[in-house]
Length: 406
Image (cartoon, rainbow, N blue to C red; front, side, top):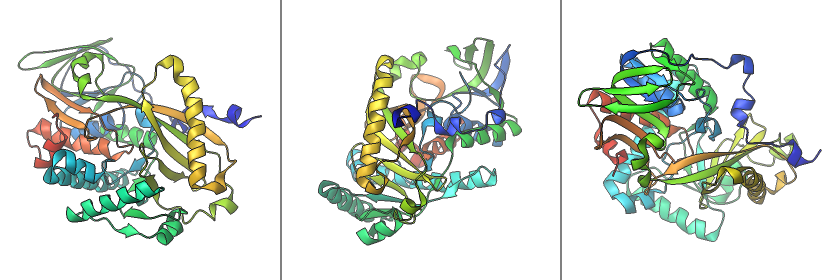
C-alpha cells in the first residue's frame, strides 16, 4: 500500500489515538437556567476558563456545539510555550517597549502557572524547553536582531552555538534557548480541565449550539436549541467571531495551519538527531514547530495559508502534508523516506500585531471575548482564562490591557 493511502488525512492524532471507551459525554442543554456566567466554546480556552471560574466560586455553565475538545484544540501542537509566538522585536515596533515587555512576561508567567495547574490536577505533561533556530542567512540576521531586542528589554535570551543546538536538537545551526516550557496532549488536557471544572460545580453541556444572544442593561439571555439561559455575563471562547458577532470579524485575518505526525522513526535514526528534548521553532514565515511525540514520532506544524473553501480542503491538505514532510526532511535529512501517519489542518484567526484579543468590547456590555490566539501553542488558552476571570471579578491587571481590543 502506498504511503498516501496509509496516511490518515483530516484526522487529529490526539483524538484518533484516544481510547473511544474513555471519551466522556455531557448531556445537551435543556430547559431554563439562571447562572452567573455562560461560556460559549468547549476548547482548551473554554475549559480552562470554566475551571478558573468554578474554582473562584463563580456559578458557571459551558456550552459546546459539538463535543468538548474536538475543535481547533485537538489540532494543536500541544506546546506550552513561554512566549506569544510573535517576534519580540516586531511586537516592540508595533506596541512600544513597555507593552511588548508586559505581554511577553505575562505569557511566560502563564506558561509556568499552566504547567503547575496541570501537575496539580494530575493531567499529563512533559517538561521541555525550546530553541528558536535560524536555517538561512536571512533568518540568522533576524535571530541576532531578536536576541538583541530581548536582552535590551531585560528578557532572558541566551544565544546558542551551532554545536550546542546540534547536541540538543540534531540541527547544526545557531539558536535562542527558552528554558521553560512543556508539551501536552491538548485533547486530554481539555478533557481533564473540563472534568476538574465539573468537579468544582461547573455545568457542562455538549451538542448545545447557541442560536441567539439578547441583552439589556442588567442581564444576557442565551438561546440554545433546548432552552434559554439567563446570566450576568457571557464569555465567548470560540477562537474567532462566530456569525453572532459578524461585526468583530474586521479585526482578524482568517488562516489555516497544517500539521503532520510521522510514523515511528527507527531507533538508529533517532540516535543521530540529538537528545530530542527541545521543541524546535524556526524563523521561517510562517514558522515551523517541531517536537517529538512519545519519544519516537516527529510532529511538525506550519505551511500556514489563507483559509480555503471547503471544496478545496482535501486537495490542499494532501499537498500541504507533502510540503511539510519535504520541509522536515530538509532540516532532518536522515528521516527522508519515513511516511506521514497523520496529516491535518486547523483554522485560526490572527490579529494585526499577533497578540490575541481577550476581554470586553465596548459594543457588548455583558460579554467577554477570547479571540485571535495564533501562537500555535496551548499557553494562550490558560492566559485567557485568568484574564477573563479577572475582568469578571472587576480586578484586571495592568498587563491585561495589552491583550484587549485595540
